[in-house]
Length: 196
Ligand SMILES: Cc1cc2nc3c(=O)[nH]c(=O)nc-3n(C[C@H](O)[C@H](O)[C@H](O)COP(=O)(O)O)c2cc1C
Image (cartoon, rainbow, N blue to C red; front, side):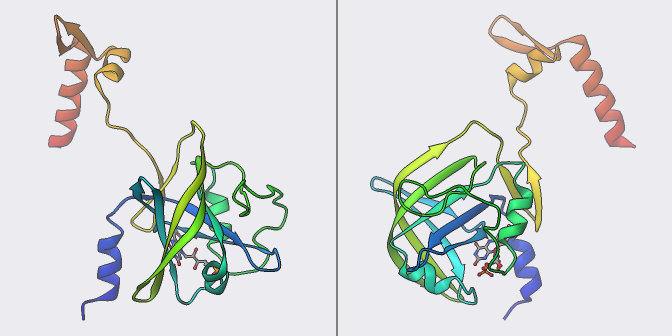
């Protein structure tokens, strides 16, 4: 058996988004938790998965739920992620998003939301893997929250040609992109810094 912390750290190299998965129990009480084990599975039929710790007190709720929903969090929803990552029954206090069309609680402010019909549950060691068929989804044009190495983060896109042109660092020469004098100066300054 290898070192558990080293294993966790290695897994943390994989960058993910952050989601909150929600469902209602038989009495209609809302449940939810923060999960970054979400992933896309199939396009046709549309299917997604996520995994839930067998220790979670919400396990029976998700086992029985006919529908559940995944909310992909926006960059400004870190407090919401923290709230749903703590055990407790008052996670939904003050939230009044109602339900999505599939019947699971809706948490406002998301970057994307997938309403699912529960399809399969698989064994995954100390987690249960839930596979759902997406029956409705919604997306907003907003930056997502990301998670890496046990910390929250923001997306930083690699600059493309258009960004460099906009900043005056490069210009089109024929069909090629060439550095302007400003771009050349900046590159030289960065190289000098890197050599220090
Ligand atoms: C960024 C992040 C991602 C998480 N991902 C998962 C996950 O995929 N599955 C899981 O079971 N717990 C995950 N957790 C931990 C749960 O959110 C946490 O244990 C929560 O208290 C579970 O809810 P419950 O106590 O109401 O069952 C994650 C926590 C954070 C902060």
